[in-house]
Length: 92
Image (cartoon, rainbow, N blue to C red; front, side):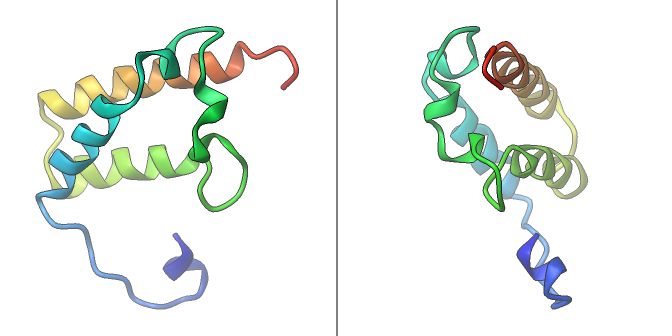
């Protein structure tokens, strides 16, 4: 994203990216995607370049460069739960 903003060419992710992203999501604590859990403790739950848009971008990259298979569909459901956990925080 930063490369795009600076109008520089960035290398596209390799096919291995999908597996790395899936492993990352699976390694998150279960409390990250539960209502009232610890989602706001994650660095990407903050605003800015490392915000939740990174999760959406990673889903896109996984679909385009690694194939939208079973892992992608499972990741989509997990990120949906993460977004719902964020939306359920009353002070936001």
